Image 1 (cartoon, rainbow, N blue to C red):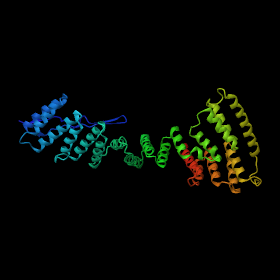
Image 2: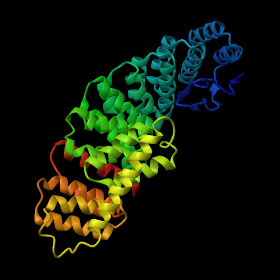
Image 3: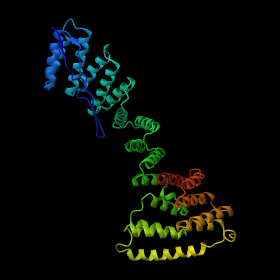
Length: 411
């Protein structure tokens, strides 16, 4: 008489869970012939397993393994049941022992080895044995496994051990592979990079991580971190305060009435009343200004800014570009930027170009302002080209790099 087992529950309870993703792997039906004595015992072991009687199931598996006259297929099936019982009982050590025997057995197919290692890896991860999870996942990949979530599991297993260097290596590998495949990596992957660089006190790496975050996921909190890292407040020259506030405005980081008032005052002090006028109008439109005990002061500033902006427009709107020798280049660049903010892009850009020709005190600052003017005028490609000309690692160069990122997001 022969006994046929309809199903062995090996790997059936193995589940991979990560970030709300669940994938279950089930042992396919087995219909090979077992010897009578082994088959009966394994049938009883399966019944015990289904009833969650794990000790009885283990006893029956041991009894089957002790049976004389076993065939290779008997041993192979016993080892599968042994692994299934250990996995179902939640005993990681027993599972590892059983799996190791099964992995080294001659009848275990390459795909079966991959399935076993996947189940083993996820079991170790769920048991919070992250060092074992790492070992099993590496074996899984070496065996030819390629499920994408296993790379995520590997990253998390390193991270939860606070092994930041290996976490960085594996996470960057995953990001690079997904980019190469034309995919946008998950936001959490860049967050992992930031976490590791922060823990390792690697400022340049942290800047790189937040640069990628604002490139793919341009949230205000990521911009805030990146701007803070790139532009140390105590190192920003007074001449770049306006550029900083304009950057904060474009990235949604001006939140309060005090932010708007300070930014407008800096714009006026920089002799850019047209931006101050735009800024204050935006503050009133959003309901940030015009409320509370400071509303009277805000109204006074608004009136002053409007008058100053109008005076500037009256002064420069009809200037003869062929007769600008009486002005120095910096004045022309500033006046041109004001006109661009006021909506007179063509005239403003022409004035700025004339100013550069006549010579300016800081050519890089003039390039930065010209890049901003092109950006305001909606000429993003030209803006990026002007900003690309600014090199080095000065605060101004860092500002230009941040603005290039803004331009990418606004396209």
